Amino acid sequence: MTTRIDTRFAELKKQGRSAFVTFVMAGDPDPDMSLQIIKALPKAGADVIEIGMPFTDPMADGPSIQAAGLRALKAGMTLKKTLELVRGFRKEDDATPLVLMGYYNPIYIYGVDKFLVDAKSAGVDGLIIVDLPPEEDTELCLPALKAGLNFIRLATPTTDDKRLPAVLANTSGFVYYVSITGITGSAAADSGAVSEAVVRIKRHTTLPVCVGFGIRTREAARAIAAHADGAVVGTALVDALRGSLDSEGRATAKTVNAVAEIAASLAQGVRGAAQAAE
Image (cartoon, rainbow, N blue to C red):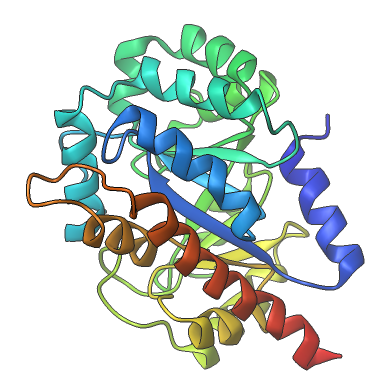
């Protein structure tokens, strides 16, 4: 079964360029504004959109994304409303792949089978669940694949050749390589080290390899896109959003544009890598 993610990466391969993958938190700073932001991302150049599922204990997230999750929770965001957000997006855009990213607990509470049915019917294409190791594949990964959703795994600098096959066993859609050890938004990615890591992962899989964590500028996006099948940017977008809010943490007239402008700049960086390679 081919998902929107598979279709998009096949299209990009034909075009000879990497994907620009964006991350924003569902419901940040409020559900309505969040939908407007997500709708603006494809126009700004996003090829794939990751949507964070707000959670009270986001252990792998840096301060920016943690704060985004807290703003969303404060605005009343739930997993059910996150699926409604996806539904709202799909009314106008049936092509852009959407990936839900987050932690297992909210899905477990929602009920795995119900969640998979609802996510699929809403228009979700894939899942990245950061706290479910391959040893727990029967919990969510295998049922998700059966439901026709991609299950995207994280590989890190500490995932050695012995561990990689287990990580990749039931992965689909793409592999998300975390370019630095630690939390999101904490350091800059080293394109030389990333290049070696991508080559190593590709020895074990035919899936596209996207690289995230530590990409904040157009130049950094371009450097990573030269070596990987996609560059993932989250913290830079979330920081731009936060910078547009008023003193009460509410959206302003500048909020959508603030995110779209930085997304467009980073998208140009990713596309610039393909032009430089020609």
